[in-house]
Image 1 (cartoon, rainbow, N blue to C red):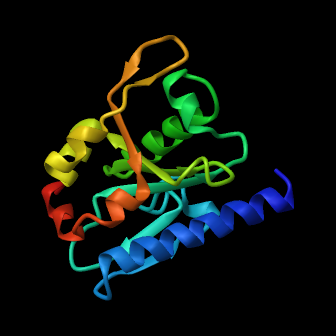
Image 2 (cartoon, rainbow, N blue to C red):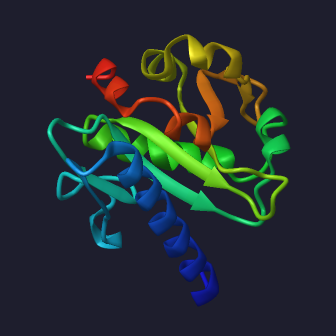
Image 3 (tube, helix red, strand yellow):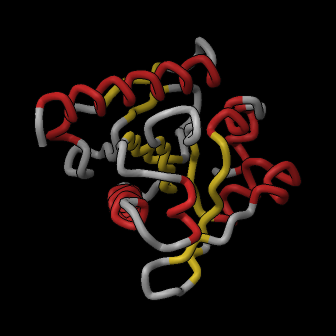
Length: 165
């Protein structure tokens, strides 16, 4: 991976961390996890860590790539499957739910968030029912994953996180 790609990824991780910090409020400390600590060996997983008044239920993985297009989600193509597997594997190591915040380049691909459908429904309630998107893997099997706009999560009350615990 080249320096420009790493810089772009780090910039995206910082943007996601700032957005989540604002969403959660001042009782929380949101930070980027060092690359050598993201695999669960030190009890942390994903790109972003959290300290707050209760356990944050997600391991958050942030991905930004020019090769990603939202339409790939319904075709089973593109990098989503690899990203989702990474997010899921890391989350399971530390006993958390996976959350993948992803974005392609340009305005035609807004920031999206992916999480397991039952988790998204508990977190978002009826607001998430409209957003259920069927995601297909390359072998045409349906994944139980809900993908919706990251802004929709940020506009939902963060106190609903307690529904996940």
